[in-house]
Length: 294
Image (cartoon, helix red, strand yellow):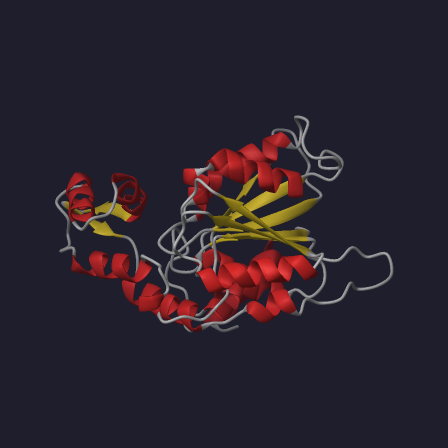
């Protein structure tokens, strides 16, 4: 077996106390993040199913699988190629390894495009997909509205080893990013010897970002698979956008709305107060949308 076939990303399972989930949902973070970014939000979703959740949720509870996508978190040193497709294939191997009934996928930003590629690879068996402030279009990185290319260059420019975690936070804020974003990025900083280093392979992340901006995955939404047979429920996709986010272009927002108007399998919700970081800017609004859909 070659290294690529053997690679399975790191993960953590989240369920409500004493719950026995009968179906599972992959949860995919954005670039520079990790599964832990979504732990608090997902635990709230899991607990809601046993505390007066959406109809049917208690009878068929969801469990959640927090994934560290390739080259993020604990999923370090993955084999090439470093692409959206490879990240989706990682998820297929993870599902096989776990032996759980994976019926849904939720992805934010970069993780949303990986979710689309995973949906394409699972024409049957997936009930729900959640795309959180992700643009399915291809777009040059400099025209995307995304801050990610600039963050990557910032991380490259910080001399290592770093004197302290606080020194890293100061360097990030000096570049114009908020304290909150600096704290989030600092989750990737680890002590090594007498200093600190960024626990990310920035060359691999650059390859992933390059492929992210090059991929157009609208066909996954606009030409979904037909139900497997009579009485089988069609897959439902829920798109949630930040009203103040620049990461999804106006053209793509209009395309989402036009598709939702004619496609019963797709819904679009906009959180007016939220920017790109939906679960940080408006956790209650995002929770309400996803809870109702589950």
